[in-house]
Length: 293
Image (cartoon, rainbow, N blue to C red; front, side, top):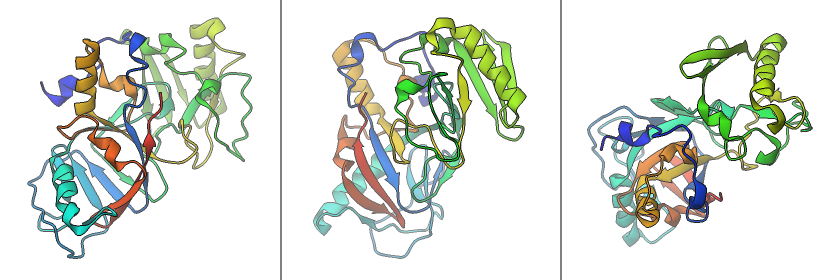
């Protein structure tokens, strides 16, 4: 099966139903400590273990991790004995990056990306940069703080959101909402009237599901993620396949709304990265925790 087919939603209205317990810790969260470039561009893999200085950025492509220059060598450190480096290197080398996604508006459509540059302590630019909050939610954009996901409209509670397709046009700062291929709302998010048009649409569309009039929120350098820290979420497609085998049902990978979908070839191998800091080239990455669902 092609990766593009695997990552396409099979049914907009597909729900996890009884899978919640089985998928309770599917995926891991990562924190970036150095600049890193993620890309889906294809290239020839040319790497070996050594301590040769490398370039500042690391690239990730559909097929493998690779240095931006094909002649570069990579030194991998994992906080383990030198004899164990090769094992980690082989695992990383075999990992296949299938797709990169960001979600400009929390709870709405994913946006596939061909490449993205991450900064230390940051997340994917514009990932969860906006959120539709319940009217009862208190939030000061001048002093943003972490809020639990229950304060916002989200697919887990507002299933009708799955019938919508949203597009954020970065240049014009417009949000476009479509249903069944037809545009149902459009507004510039940098203008009060534009935000109001989006808010009014969701108020009418979701009705009593919204506590008070919905509010479209944004704050500079703030992300409305489910974690207080800026991080990157990853899903191992091998683990997803194993979950499908156990529950005997197909599962749309995008249900898990991760930033990176990759394939190690071995289910649950990604959990080995939790609570460990390591380097791939000059990029320092730290595995934080398993994703709780």
